[in-house]
Image (cartoon, rainbow, N blue to C red):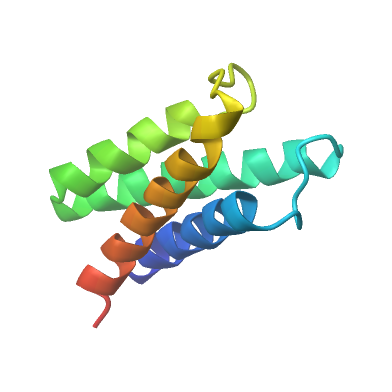
Length: 101
């Protein structure tokens, strides 16, 4: 369970950094690597939550992994990007806070 929560925590940090700072600008080549890291951490968290029997957290992490994947990225309007990344990061952080022991 600890690996699952660490993966969800990494995803939360990446999402909140992308939403509120220019640490990871979208135009840099580094942004693609960060998107891969985000998708991988969300996929690991999703599988981990599924193994632990937390279907809700599993579904949310899987949906976020699909939404933020770099192969077929969703076209998120600029005025919605901050809101979506903030809410997604908050959900990932809530999953960590809820299950950390």
